[in-house]
Length: 275
DNA sequence: CTACCATCCTGGTTGC
DNA sequence: TGCAACCAGGATGGTA
View 1 (tube, rainbow, N blue to C red):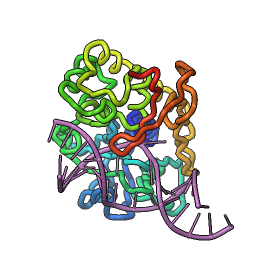
View 2 (view 1 turned 60 degrees about the horizontal axis):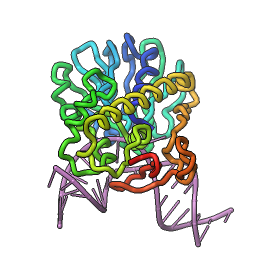
View 3 (view 1 turned 90 degrees about the horizontal axis):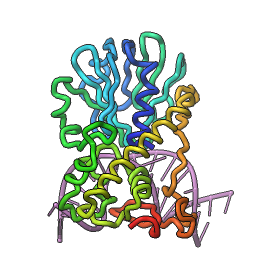
View 4 (view 1 turned 30 degrees about the horizontal axis):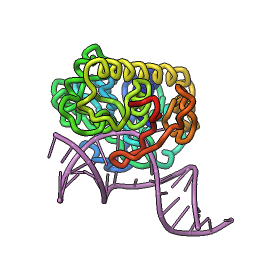
């Protein structure tokens, strides 16, 4: 379930296992996920030390001691499972296994295989094809109402679709777009170009607030993350509208949450509160 | 530019 | 109960 808050939660969960650790063993159990693994993937990672772990949008960035960066994306169903000391064969859908110099296993498990890995020189990271076109980090200081308004200006697409566009703002997905629009009182069907001024300012602030709340909630259930059972323990977030079709609106309690399909994906909103 | 669609893949849920 | 259809948190590429 990886949108920005989940990816950030995963990043934090990986830190104790990987930061400062050397990768003693790396094994790829298949040659490709969404895209082919980089050539000699396991060989190039084996023996490397993970200096730090960062994040850009929904990408996890592992900074290595040889000037390279391991880029990881969870896709729809990807997860990392940390096991302190595992002596068992790879689980079903476990495609990559890392074992650190402390004997900790970090397994990448991804049933749908929409995830990806790539290797990139640190100096060229911002020019990497996957990262170059990304819009601002919504939790960064450069993301403001004015910046959002400028990105939306002239767009004739519904605001829902515009916010899913990673070039506008990086890291939102289907759930948090619905949640942020609900908090901001903006209809998902409103044309993006009409979200300007105070409306854009409010939307930017609500985007930040909902992401921060989700990260805070994710952090609180992070314990489950390291269970060797393989159970990821993604936090059950209390969504206001997402997947709540037909339920009363938590704000006005009069309207019912509606579900519509935009660009082939479900959107949830309160027609009464959101204009 | 925009809207819409299909696609990658598996698994869980729903409906007959 | 069995089975098929449908749906899912992402991202891209093609078409009109």
